[in-house]
Length: 436
Image (cartoon, rainbow, N blue to C red):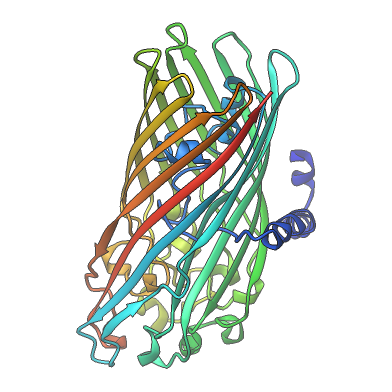
């Protein structure tokens, strides 16, 4: 597949990916699932898999199931052959406030036109021999959803309701090689399928290079391909686990229907990210773990470019190469976790994570559409083993409310004042595992 990627154009890969992944995505929709639409650590999911969710996403060196593919594919070497199925109910609460605006935009705006989302997960692991394990995972990588029945930008000529919906799903086949008794390396190919739509922004047509493809174009899709590589080691009689992983930037094909909104004619890639992790079995019952992750949002022009009125007035419009974006910064995410085996059949989990703020206070105006400002998550979870082959897991996460106050956020040309953003979240997951 990597050879094929090197010989094909991005458009050819995108067309091939749509042909493969879109039917799978549609089958999930028809089964009652919804593509992911959420915002946690920026717009990345805070964890992959219900077990990791109970540990606030701590999974770079703490391997609990085949969903390890999504965090560190080298973890496949340290779990049993298994099938994992699960779903997570995600409920974000997002809102915005505009104050001190001379154009008449002042008010409180509720972004919860839709309150609940169901996010599926699937993974499978099978050992080829004592050294090589294969696996595949399907999971939501990231997303964002807002729906304002009362348009926060109405005072600037925008009509109807406003909001965006971004969803990203990965299909990731993986291989892990345990090259010594204590160390492994793994590689996963990340096939990306993403969808986006925006509405209620046509009033900004005068600032777009392509006003016909700025807003209200319905859902558009794009695809891309990248890679995640990982390493894992077990030391001190396997009480100490170390892990490291790196995911390449995914250069996705453009959102053609929104080439007048996103910089570089609809460009919207997935950022490079990497993580380090450690886990230590203090006693046979108690395990502690920690991760540090870095996500490079600022390296994506559509996400990292600042919304700057001076650029707009000088001709750098929405959709131009250096056109306005959401102004996000790169962030670090810090995660801590504890597992305790209280009974041979019952394992309890807990975790806490904190991230840097991706949204600068000066960039809150456009981020009314994407108020991904939560920074702290607390999680609890449990696994109950039915028998030697089957287990159920449950996890609950609360993302604590964050109120980001704007600072010089609304340009004087739009009446000045400040845009304040607020978000909190509740996340409930349930998963089934069959080991063989």
